[in-house]
Length: 169
Image (cartoon, rainbow, N blue to C red):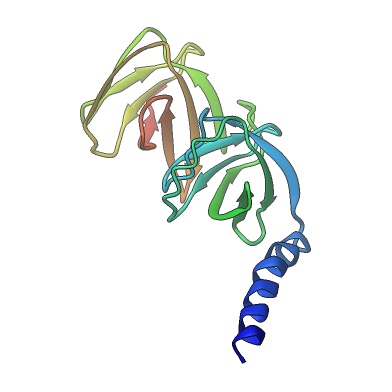
């Protein structure tokens, strides 16, 4: 009896990715961050410009530009055989898309202090709207701004968490 139950488990584990593939999945690769860790709250950008977020996972994968299978309809992404829960925030990286924007901070950045005001090189000015304190010095770091549940979030390179922001200008 044990061999049958073991065989059933092996078949179901092997068949699971095949079931996901049938749900409008496609191949891509993660362009940022590098390395990709696969942890809860990590914002990632695919080579096609899609911006997403890892949800409820703590994998510590440490992968540089991994190839992935994206299954946005099921909220899954497969990285090196591991299935991660994800949420897609936008499908484009252009500034004309209200859903997301890639930019760079104009000058020095010292982290978040509660109501930090951030000027971007494109002239936009944003203010921290979600309380979070984190010191991190960086010169002209890259940022991704995206909309999640009607709130704009800013992910600054080198900061482990995306922070709520509102646009001032």
